[in-house]
Amino acid sequence: MKEKQNFGFYMETIIMLPVFMIAIPNIVRVFTASYGTSRNAERLTDAVILASNGAELVLASHSPEEIMTVLEDAGPELAENVITAHFDDNLEMSKDGPIEMKIDWQETETDFAHTVITISYSGKELYELETGRYLEESGS
Image (cartoon, rainbow, N blue to C red; front, side, top):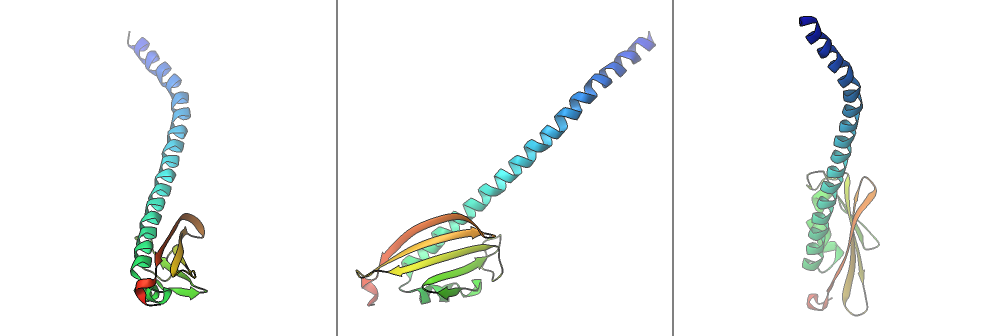
């Protein structure tokens, strides 16, 4: 009687082994894909937050130079009215962070500053926001 029980256990083990060998790599693949999707969603959320912060900077400033003073810890650069600043993964200002925010400030003849805020992560563009402000109150 005992030999029959052992035989059943071994048969079940032999049958389940291939099932586990097929299932485990698929489960690992699903978890890896979900981690990648989750990480991309987190970066996109961070990009939206930074872009909205950039839009608030545009609304509070009268010139690109004013924005530069606020972003001085981010190692800002100004070239042809395009401000480039860097942030780390925690959205803290960092001169060598992987997240880059570009604010393209273009003034029109009608005292309007049209801006395009672009957020990139390690060179890959994640988010772009267009906004602007009237400059007539600034006296410029």
